[in-house]
Image (cartoon, rainbow, N blue to C red; front, top):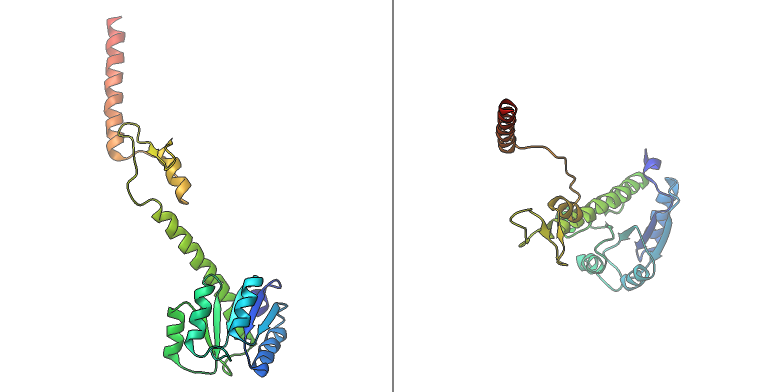
Length: 212
């Protein structure tokens, strides 16, 4: 099951100053058959520079580094790289801190010595997928917000004027600004009105035929 979660093209940045812990993470990944591209940084500053120079799928972060200490380490990293999922690897077994980390944007909080390669791979894979869903949700919310405000609409044909001054069919405008698709039908009121008009038309046609 674990191997099904592994993508060989996965690019991981490990920010960890302890050589022993860094080596252990590498061994866990390789033992699980994860053929990933793993880069390491021993300082937060070094990790931030690598994030500017290269694209990564996920970050594994130790909170206590030579140039940054505690939860502020994650906050600084996340502030500058909000779209990249991050997993905190720490020796501090604190449930409250773990929950706070997730609330502030971390995808997971793993305590050193309490996870193996299988759990690490699962956490990495699930974190990447969750981040994709979050980004898609943010995109969808922005698209929905684009429909807020005052929309100029024609009182007769119901076309909508866009921000460039062009008049568009209502369906076309909504489809362009969202992922909604339209299926056409007839509401009860319009159906009743249509039947009444049709009956009137049929009555007129019969009258014309009778007069002939």
